[in-house]
Image 1 (cartoon, rainbow, N blue to C red):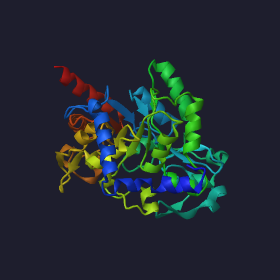
Image 2 (image 1 turned 135 degrees about the vertical axis):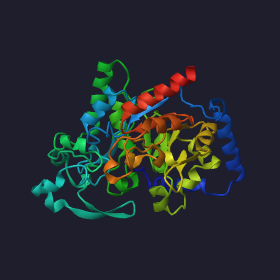
Image 3 (image 1 turned 90 degrees about the vertical axis):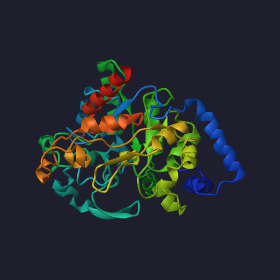
Image 4 (image 1 turned 90 degrees about the horizontal axis):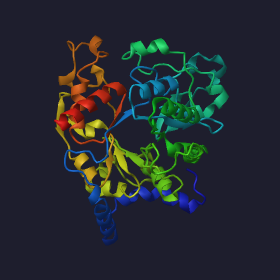
Amino acid sequence: MRPTTALTAAVALLAPTVLLAPASATEVVERDAVTASTASTAAAPGQPIAERRLVIGHRGASGYRPEHTLASYELAARLGADFIEPDLVSTKDHVLVVRHENEISTTTDVADHPELADRKTTKTVDGKDVTGWFTEDLTLAELKTLRAKERLPEIREESTIYDGLYEVPTFDEVLALRESLSAELGRDVGVYPETKHPTYFDGVGLSLEEPLVAALAREDLDDADDPVFVQSFEPSNLRELHEQGQLQVPLVQLLSPTGAPYDAVAAGSGLTYADAVTPRGLAFIATYAAGIGPDKNQVIGRNADETLGAPTTLVDDAHAAGLQVHPYTFRAENAFLPAELRTGDGQSEDLDDFGKVLEEERLFWGTGIDAMFADQPDVAVVSRGLVEDAGRE
């Protein structure tokens, strides 16, 4: 996001340091005010805080179709997903398109286009050197000549039969699909966009937030009760969206088991994701966001032998702060499941087989999470139903 003055830019960049500073009397008052204001919405331990549990089609139905394609989103909605999740990056001509990363060699056939060979380069994105082709170096017209392909062909061989069929969609095309599917299915299909690498895109003059806000406003999807969540791993852009007030939809702070948000790294603030999941950190997140999106291992950890450990206190702590909890990512293949829920003989050829994912998802629903991101949303719909049916018995 491009603030109007250098001072505003500095404040926005340095804002995450509040989480690290020693608790002054003012901060204690602010924290206690947050806690008091959210106490009435706090859920009982092990119970969801949201009115209903949500299934989010992670990059669409990415367990069945190449991710972030209109085909993947449509299938997710038809399989029962409440929300579809587009990750947003920018083209050279500042159009929001949908890719998990701005480097697209693993998700498109760009390497097969000799006319684009000279665009291959190495860049530093969020402090890491990345080599390939980048959306911000291609115009929308050039990007539309590419076709999507399966990102995990060794795990999702069946999905590779769809390689080469689908374009890279724009965010506007995803919103139009959402509207048509909502009308056809007779229910609101929600959209759950993520701003990818917002500090990086600010640095190259292709801010993501302004076109995101404009696109949602054009579709009349910018009010608090509209079926939209906006998420980011970086706090600064979420805080600025909240403070500007142009977008009233709930915001979700994404988290990671390790490391730090890149805006905090760029600012030298020292903030880490570990700071964010403390009660004090969660109370601060509640001042600008409605929920958190942790890695599922932050909800139930893994032991050294890859079996499931004990649930953490994160869900209950977040609910006590008035925050919903939407963990990522639930996947049916053995490669992604805890050891005791894998099927087969444990050989490499078994990695793409589906394991006991219903059991895993039921355990996580049981912690009181409010939603889950799932590559196979139909499975998550079934596991949710099993939990809800058991709760009515």
